[in-house]
Length: 184
Image 1 (spheres, rainbow, N blue to C red):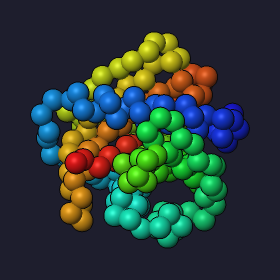
Image 2: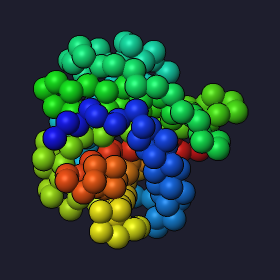
Image 3: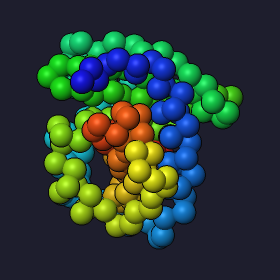
Image 4: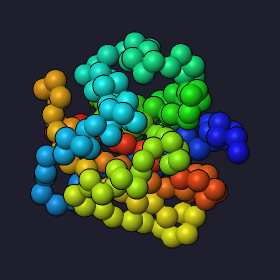
């Protein structure tokens, strides 16, 4: 399995997925505070400190260095409708993609997602921390979105979501993305 192959061509698919996830996130029930165990998972596996630095306005190069990885490569930038995304990929020691999303019109930051491969994270434990979930698609195109809760960091109000899908991988494995979205 070559995880990096075809990544650039899926940037638009990831962008569309982000738009769908953002629209679904507004349909989740009343806001609940994210559990401390969920934040531990976010820190341990999904670059939580890096995401918060990016959401606070830190430059991407400086924030990526905080992950302790030195092989991040810029995959490209894509715009679909109201959202522009820039994606960065690291393959060592395991696959990690960090995607920064902003408003195409104003450039205002909307969120950051950190994507990992399911076998590299304890997804079966993480998903049980969720307050709510929804699914779309079926078979290899099925996607599950989990509402992990709302939190704050450095004065920012952040909604935490996880998306699990195999639709970009041909169903051979799943990608798990932790989405950190700014709340208005």
